[in-house]
Length: 100
Image (cartoon, rainbow, N blue to C red; front, side):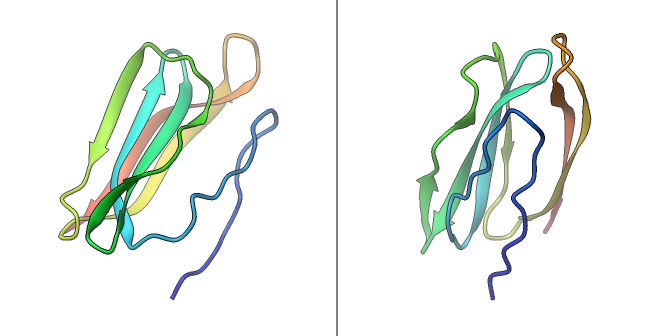
């Protein structure tokens, strides 16, 4: 069963919905002083599917969360909302929570 919640986010961004997939395989984050963009890799019927990149074009560093799908699955992601250098709301550290 699919349960839709959200969208979530602060001012200045746009909500997005990548659609319905079987699960999450990976998350790629581009960042510098805060998170600039996020790209999610999903599973659709046993095949990897990359969704579009959401948000800005900045971020000179990247981080990847790669799950051992289907044995490992994402149960949560958390971060800290604070102001960026221009005093706009931004998400800083991100922590993944997964289970096998």
